[in-house]
Amino acid sequence: MRILIHIDDADQWREALASRLPEAEIFTSDQDAVDDIDYLAVWKPPAALLERQARVKGIVNLGAGVDALLNNPGLPQDVPIVKLRDAGMGELMADYVRYGVLHFQRDFDRYQRQEASAEWREIPVVAKVDWGVGILGLGAIGTHVAQSLAADGFSVHGWSRSPKQVEGVTCHHGDDGLNELLGRVRTLVTLLPDTQSTRHIVNADTLAALPEGATLINPGRGPLVDESALLEALGPGHEEGRLRGAILDAFPTEPLAADNPLWAHPRVRITPHMAAPTLIEEAADQVADTLRAWEAGEPVTTVDREAGY
Ligand code: NDP
Image 1 (cartoon, rainbow, N blue to C red):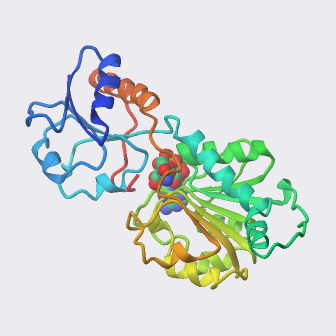
Image 2: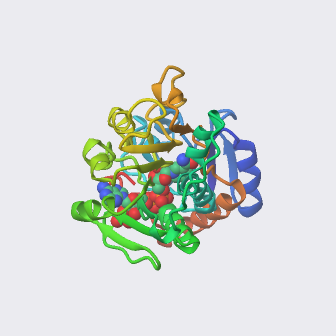
């Protein structure tokens, strides 16, 4: 089996895969152009690489989100794609979201503002059980996050395309399900893929359906959120608007432009798409298992190109 890797830390990936797949010949895309490749293991490859390798048996996306790959103009039509499923990212994401939820539930945002004017005032705590958290997207990562927060004692609601049952989580689906969820949550977390049907799912209407003073955490994808509706719902300055605050990790264009008003907004926290980076060792286990199964003709779960995830 001949594998070609394209990712920033390709040498590390090559070592990790070589130790798990001793039978494979593994190349990185910075080596001289190689042909007769069976599988690509890639993250944001150039279109020319995909065009050149159009006859591969399969492509492994070295991340959980496939939006960049599916939008790549060089992507061959009929080649099956496999993406990473959790592979350790669920726990990193759960930490990110937990930090964000606690930031608001334990009023760290408000204490930060009080600190600026040396104001010593304790704010009564809202119990976790009375703090509804809505997770949009109950996939490999979303489910892990939802269950972690439920185990912490928060009242967790989840939303997916198809009906789901997740222990400890109130599950909703479809348009009606979304409205039910929105009315009940103080923190909305977006862990959906970026597809045609999820773009701007957080818009003026969805934000208006949240209770007054709700909060938003978006570690999913930038296009999920309509930025002007978000700024409108936040209102300007330190005074809390309909939306109390937001924590954002993903943006339609990254890096986020220096003149984007979100940087300067006092009730917005920004992180540079760091919520759940791919962990090479855990991911390499999964990639090696997938490639072995693929090569043996066993079933593997592939990306639904039409659905976009
Ligand atoms: P999955 O593909 O496993 O799951 C996607 C979930 O979204 C599924 O529950 C799916 O529903 C649901 N969904 C998709 N479309 C719709 C829709 N139109 N309406 C309602 N629900 C929908 O994704 P992961 O959990 O692995 O990852 C989620 C996202 O997190 C990734 O796509 C990526 O964008 C982001 N991410 C961000 C990272 C970061 O560092 N910031 C790191 C890793 C991921 P159903 O179950 O019914 O199919």
